Image 1 (tube, rainbow, N blue to C red):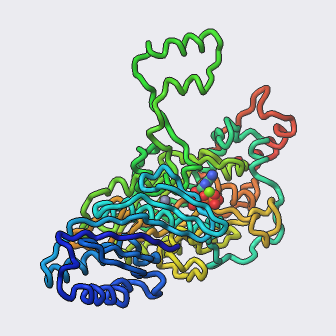
Image 2: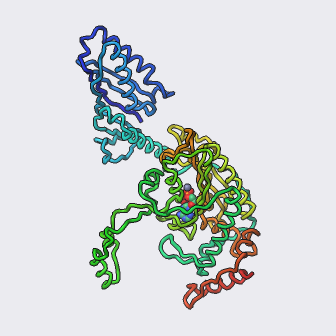
Length: 532
Ligand code: ATP
Ligand code: ZN
Ligand code: MG
């Protein structure tokens, strides 16, 4: 990406009448080109260059070309400052105005960017490049974060293109090695549905009857007791529906808007205003979503997506001191919602899922230490407590990568990034094929991503970081059942202890449920092992 534009600097008097001014300006331009405009970029191509200039009465008109490190806006301001201070001192000249004419951004390849952005004038798609023509910008526009944000948007688009649609870079950190000698090739999702412990309400959404709820709760409690409580995490209850501004600050509205689910409020609280609709429903016994939409306001919330959003929101604009740090909480008070489009399978990839979200906030070294403690405990939990066949990988989402280093991703787990935990699902196929592994949880450290956007501060100006970790309850349970089966005798000791600590709930059996005779028979067989 490179940028070009014509900078016009208007002075309060004609320049041409001053003595030796032409040579003096030539010197200043030379200083700018050789030194000042090159500062802050290792590669001169990433810095700025004045390609041409002319003096025209009281104006200096400069043709500028810049890279991405010292960009057009920054270069314009540097040129302005050098000319203002030097010509001011020597000739008592003052700058009256600044105008950046015909600024253009030239990008390799084709990039689509919305023409709805106020500073975009026109977009020209060439064979191998895209030229984005911007409107003329005055000094206040140049200083605005709008221009900066626009350039950042373009850089991000270019970056995304380089990653070639790959969401993340994956590299193995550690694994349990082969643990399962005779795999069970049964999909637990299918069994659970056949025996009626779960019933699908709508796409990606299930009702868990008491037996399955019992298993999910036992597993969550085991995780809380074995991992979270010993590390000093405390439970909080987070909201599950968030105002749109929160999604702007977390970045989710920019990053994953295609998988978010939104909520709308009714247009009126006065039920008489719904009379037409109610009458229709009364007689026709149906409602069309299009019709309903007319009675609703545009969406003003999104449903819980990452589950840690309220944590950052809570500390927005707060000033923390050493005594209050680090903060270590977890929430499992309600579901998360994601539109997964076609990828739905059983209860392991659903639209409405349940998760224990673990969050922490502190100074960088605290955040890294907490992550490391969690990492150890997670490994102990997967390996010793649940005896799973597992692996963990360092995954770097593309947006954590700085410009230019996308090709050679260094692995430094103390940098912001994510560690994924995965379990092998034997029913899907052989362990050497990645698609047969399921991400069950992860741990991230975000650096200042959220403390910056939510302006979370330390009283002595120290840097604050955040971290979060998601324990997807359904996924851990499916992984466990896929590897260990549905016979409690084969379950890891601790899990069995938690499941058998209270009487096992009754399975639902009616005239018509479970749906098939095979399901009913299978249920009888399975629950005969659930007596204690
Ligand atoms: P995947 O790549 O499998 O879609 P993800 O990267 O989208 O996972 P995260 O955004 O990291 O997942 O969410 C954290 C945790 O939440 C996951 O490790 C998983 O346990 C759980 N999770 C995420 N999406 C779903 C879903 N659709 N159904 C059930 N659990 C989910
Ligand atoms: Zn999170
Ligand atoms: Mg996903």
